[in-house]
Image (cartoon, rainbow, N blue to C red):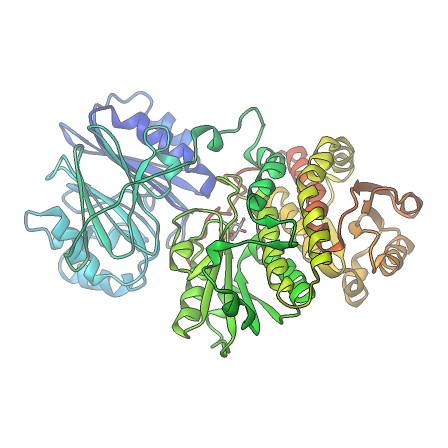
Length: 608
Ligand code: G6P
C-alpha cells in the first residue's frame, strides 16, 4: 500500500527519495510523486504508473535540493491520476504533504474548507489535511500540523514540508506506520525501514498519536496533546542484502528459496528434544495460564488466514482445545463471544494489517488475552499484543507471501506442541514430533532442488483460464493457499476446495480444459482423495498430484505427479505448499506477469 520517504540533510535529495521509493515499490502502488524545497520554492512532480515514469519525467530537470518528501499512492479515494497523486499542496503552494491512510470525515472537512474560501482540486481525502494545516498556520509548522490533526478522524502517516520552514519535515502517525532514520547531519522519515536502510540502521519508530519535527541535525517528538516524548533509538538488524534479490530474478523466487533457512530461524532455540516440547518465552504466559486456556480464536487476513486454518487443525489435534479461525474483517464487526478462558491469536506477516489490528483491539476491549504471531519486529500488532512469537522470516518483499506462510505454520506447530504436551500429547509423541520438525528445513531444500518438473508442468498449463485445487484435512488450507498464490500473481481464476466438496459444485466445471491440483499424500485420507481423483479423471479433468515420495501407484492414476518427502501428517503443509508456490511462480512468469508486484495488490493493507 502507499509508501512515504522523506529526507533532510546535506546530500542531493532527489536520488535518495527515488531510491527510497523504489525500495517501497513492493508494497503496491499505482502512482508516485515527490516535492522538494529549492531556492525557487516548492518543486513538485507526479506521475501515474511506475516510479520509472516519474524518473523519466524529471530526468532532464536540474534541481538542486537537499530536502524533500516522496510518495507511492495506492488509490482509495479518487482514481489513480496525476492530479490525485501525492504530494498535495496548499492554495499558496508553500506547504506540501504526503499521506498514508484514510481520513474518514474528509467530506465534512471539505465543506468547511470550501466555506472558508479554500479551493480543493482533487478527489482525495488527503488534500484536505494540507489545507487544514495552512488554515492553522501561525508561524509554527508543527503546531499547525497538530491543530489540523485534531480536526481529522481516521488513520494517517503523514510527512509535511514547507518553504516557510526549509529545514524541517513534520511527520505524524495514527494507525499508519512511520519511522525516523537517524544519520550524521541528515535525517530520514519513511513508512518502512527498507526505504532508508542503505543510509542508516538507527531508527525511531513513531507511535500512534505522535508528531515529529525533523531537521538535518536533530528531531524532537511530542504527542498530539503536546507532551514531550524521549525517543529511544533502535538498531535494525535487517541488512541491505536481505532486501535485495541476490541473483534471483524475483523477490518471490528468492523468498521461496529462503524457506529452509527461515523455517530453521522459526525453530531455533525453541525445541526441547528431551522433553519433546516447545519453548516460547515470548508468549509471556505462566504454565498455569497456558493450562487454563479453554478456547482459542485465531484471526488474520489473506495468506496469514490460511496459516491460521492450519493452526486450527494442529492445535485441536495436539491440544484438544477448540479453535475458531475468523477473518479479521468479519471478527471485528460481529460482536464476538469471548468468554473467560478464551485467548485470541492474531497472525500477521507485516503486523500492520488494519483489519487484523482492529480485531486485536476489539478482543482487548473485551479483556481477552491477545497473542501475536508476527514477522515485522516492533510493528503495531507486535506492540499491542500481550505476548507472542516472532517468526523471524526476515523482510518479505514479494507481495505474494511465501516464506512468512511456512514460518507462521511452523510457529503454530510449536504452539500446538507446547499446549499439547500440557494436555494430550505424551513425551514420546512429543519427541517424535520434534524429530520430524527438525528435518523439515532439509526436506524443503530437497523439494527446491527438484523444481524442474514443476516448471515443465507450468509450461503445459500456463495458458488455461481456470484451476481447481483440492486437499483434505490439514491440507485443505494448503489447497486454498495454492489457489490464492496462482490467482494473485498469474491472474488465472483459481479456487481451493476440500476435495470431497467438489461434488457439491465445482465438479460442474470439470472438462478436459480444467487442471485440478490435488494434494494426495499417504495419510489417513489417501483412499478418499484417490476416489476424488477418479471423479475428476472420469470427466477428463487434468490431475496434477502432490504425492508422497515412493507412492508409485499414484503415477498411473493422474496426469502429473510432484513428489514431496514423507513427514509426520501434521507437518505435511510445510512441504506440500512449496511445489504450489513454485507452480504459481512459473505460471506467472510464463504469462509475463509482474510477479513481485501484481496489479491492484498491496503487500501491507493498512486500510479497511
Ligand atoms: C495482503 C498481502 C497478502 C497478505 C495479507 C495479510 O493482502 O498481499 O500477502 O497475506 O495482506 O497480511 P499480513 O501482513 O497481515 O500477514
